[in-house]
Structures are given as C-alpha cells and as structure tokens.
Image 1: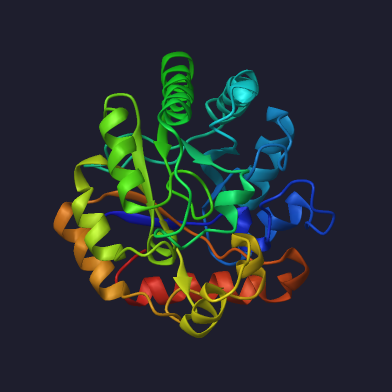
Image 2: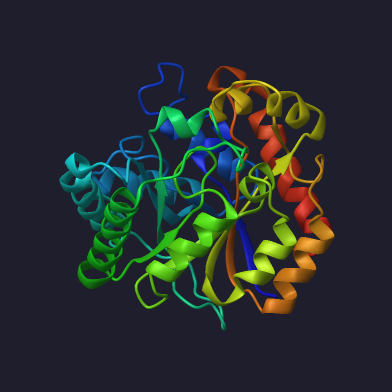
Length: 308
C-alpha cells in the first residue's frame, strides 16, 4: 500500500471556531510538522485564514500541504443553503490554489478533498452513539440534506476540481449504518465519495473493519481515530454531547484504544486503498498540553504496523 498519514487541527481541540481556548493556527502547523506529518487538514471553516499568500507561506515554512478542507455545518436547514455554498467557494478557492500533495498510483481522486459533515442539531448531538433512540429526519428534511450535499459536491468539482467526500459523523444526521446506506443510495459515486472514520464508526455502533469492507467501492478518503473503551462505556451511559465525550477523553492516541488496527490495515490492503489517511483525536483545547506527544505516538504506532 502507498498510504501517507496526515493530521488535522481537531487533534488540538479545534472543532468550534468560536471556542475561546483554541491554540493559534500557526502553532498547530508548527507542532504537526514537529511530530513528523507532511499533510494536514484545513480544519473548520474560519480557523485558518482564507488569504492564500498567508497560508501558503506558513505551510511552506513547516513543510506541510493541505490534504482536505472541511464543511462542518447544518446540512438540513433550508436557511443555511446559501451559507454552505459560500463556504464551498471560499474553501475550495483556497485549497485548489495551494501546492498539492502527490497522487499515488491507484488513488481514486487527488487530494485535497472537501470533507462534508452534518452538524448543529441538539437532538442528535445528545443521541450520538445511540442508533436505537436517535431521532431520524422526516423525508422532506432528508431530501433537503441530500440536495445540499449534491450542490456542494457538484460546485466543488465543477468549478475547482475538488472531490467532495461525505463523512458520517457522530452527533449529526448522517451517522448510523442505515443513514450511511441511504446517503450512498441518494448520492451516486460520480457526484461524491465517502470518507469513513474508524472512530466514528465504532462510536456509532459499527464494526470499523466491516464498514470499510462494505463500502470499499465508495471509499475515497479515510480518517483514523482510537477509542478509550473505559471512557466510552461511561459516556454511553450519560446524556452527553459528542464533544463533551471527547473532552472527557473518549478519543485516545492510535494504538492505545480498543480499535483493531491490524484488522483495519488488512481491510485497507484487501480493498487496495491508496493515498492519504488523516489521524484525528478530538479533545478539549484546554487539555492540549499532550497534543505533540499524542500525535507523534499515533504516527509512530501506525508506522510500526505498516503505515508510512
């Protein structure tokens, strides 16, 4: 396999750009480079500046390239449609003009990608990880979500040559196995691919290995996480938001949790996955003191089991 391991600002607790405790974006790039990564995601809209010269200079200074941009927002509300398309223009307008990571033989689409995630619904946030009790969208609301994803993906590809990938995310309306199946029926592969996240799969009641194998024909990009089983068992018994569970430590460095990374590697080899995999470890940014050690530990573990 020709697979390269990259990083993301969420490892530093960067998920909500309004959080007053976020580290400076320049610190995140500097520490990602120090940990040995050569690629990083842009992070949530508004975290890194959108001025190409500013971002390009800082990336070059740290030997980094952008592997993906992110739309992490309400994909359901009709009132949010224009905002989603504006974000698509601004994010893709930036990442399409930055120096690109190499494309490996067998890699379906070149990086950078646009990772599309639904977020911003209290009723689903508190139901993260509970497929049996989580409310589902009414048909008209689901159709609107599908329409927004299609518009984002068609715009990103048509105007910028950026491949959009749908990311099932704990606490959003595309989370559980039935919702993944439905979104893949409603959005064909020529329009958008799939970004599976091993940690979100486990958190939401799925087997990460089986999920990778089941959706191999749609898989364009992958996220890696690991889960502390003791914390996971605790938060599953609480009424708690997803990122509150992350602040409690449910995510841990790769190789220190419950996920079967030997099995995950075998699954990716079986399906012939090539390209990029991004390590994530969501946390409270106030607990960011161990980030550098954690992201390096994840990278070192993955190198030890055959990733590079």
